[in-house]
Length: 170
Image (cartoon, rainbow, N blue to C red; front, side, top):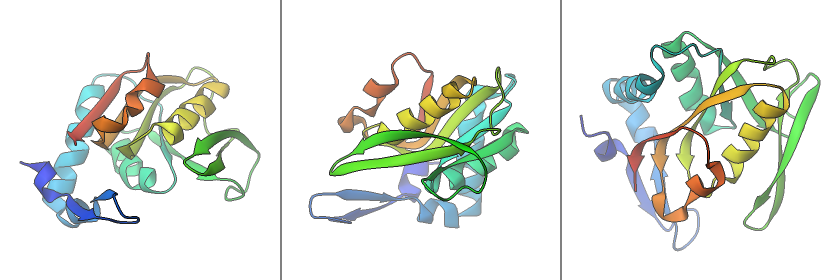
């Protein structure tokens, strides 16, 4: 199945010069969505995965069905102030400013085998902060996986040393 053909590309959104990759069209096709998650899980089959971690918000859309497919738990990483329990946090740079991500302190136990999953690898800032949070809690990141990778933005450069899987590349 050509999963790339299921992604809608919207030019000049949200700003002029941006070519937005809209995953909602893939997700609307139940067969394609199931196939995408199955393919994203494949590199991790046969490995023990304790937790899949997904950053807000589209990482939830990819991470939860991936956790289900791998019979693993799921832990959300959210923007500051969204989680109700004790958290650890990581700050990261945005194009124009900074932002903060948080995870519950008890979401990852020392030694947990963790996959970080998101819809898109662009510059790598969000996912690198997510990896840092997992490692701060003592988790071992055994893989980082994406539905889409924008190869021309070199996000992989921030993830040197990690097993990176991307299903669709632009």
